[in-house]
Length: 487
Image 1 (cartoon, rainbow, N blue to C red):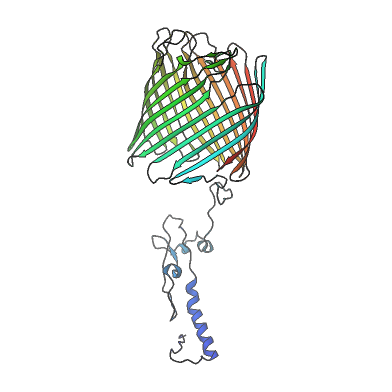
Image 2 (tube, rainbow, N blue to C red; image 1 turned 135 degrees about the vertical axis):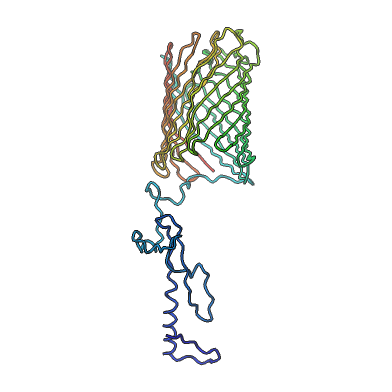
């Protein structure tokens, strides 16, 4: 059928029959061109492409963009039409289906919708958190028992740069306690750290760190003063610098760390004070690490470290020279199997050699590792093992090797309700002297209910059990409930 074109110079209306014939002919030519298929990836792995056909355009109209009028059969790189593949249903090929999630769970519009977005300051984003909890604590050692109710106020925040290159991150956290009833020692804490990452090149990254930490010495610590009503406060200042370099299949890193420890005076039960400035010291260490990339997921490595600790006073109040040299070596493997499983574990040997010949060297095998496992979306489990050396303040005692096993888990019961579980076991082994070995088991559970993006209700319960080779056991139970405000 030949389309009917009205004359441009005639101003009279066309007859009804001619007008109807023109409309039917135009629709017959135009409508088939409006159907277009959406590209699907072929099953063979080739790229699906659409072959354009010539589209008839009515006189006096403007052609639509190419993307709007593209049509034709879908084909692979080899030129074979995808619709001719008997394994592909024609209706499926012409339908843009929703992609399912990996584990089959219902997808959500914003999985982080309960996270506060923070406050922007120029090229930085600040995420502050303020918490207030009411707690009850029961502390029993042998036949002695103390109970107290206290308020704990916590403030923490993270300031992160939003730069295209390099990154500065400042984190801070502090807690303050005030007894409401009963008696018991408060345990304030403070942490502040700034880390600057410098992207020197595509293969080289440098890191600079500085920080401050404060805590009160635990009354169950072997170095604590037995007749003190308030234990000593410990100020720790840290500095660090490191560099990492990728040499292809080899990865190398080196870092240097410096720590300054300052001990305050302990308040005695008779009202006096005891100075612990003989424990003030400076400690530094250099660590070098080399890894070999078997694959992007598995990297075996070896590591060596050497350090020196110098006390402010050459001899402590008991006449012992506590300064020491430290040496260590480790070998392990680093694994990165994606978000489901990653971490590292290493075995090694470490020793502390004291300046005083009367003090035996502290030495022993070490095991350190941290593994993160996510068995399913919304569930995260962390397993940890660490080895440390704690110098002693007891006359003739060098110190202890400390081994710690830990496990922590979080699980989303609902999108706004998260459960937490934690367990840890610490084994403190004194290699010489008269001090008793010590075992500490701690467990805890908690819930966080996000009332909205900015406000959450929290509840926690914990229990700590300490046993020694000689002396009574200590049992500490805590329960608390509170509110957390985020921005």
